[in-house]
Length: 66
Image 1 (cartoon, rainbow, N blue to C red):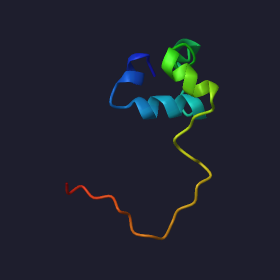
Image 2 (cartoon, helix red, strand yellow):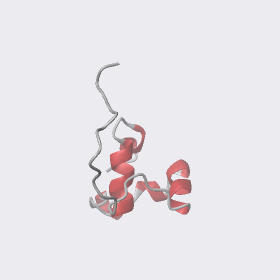
Image 3 (cartoon, rainbow, N blue to C red):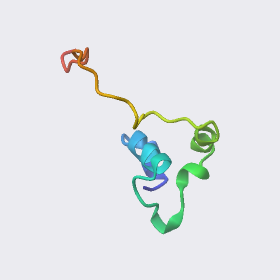
């Protein structure tokens, strides 16, 4: 949960963990509130993970084969 993690391969986890309160912020500093890009997302209540979503019974279209 660092500023650098917001610009890593794990940015989505770092962002959502902050938005949803899943992980404690180091030294109480929320980097999504001070970074210009992520601050904008927060100001517009952008979230990518819906904790209220239900599982579906369909087949996934995702495939590792490219």
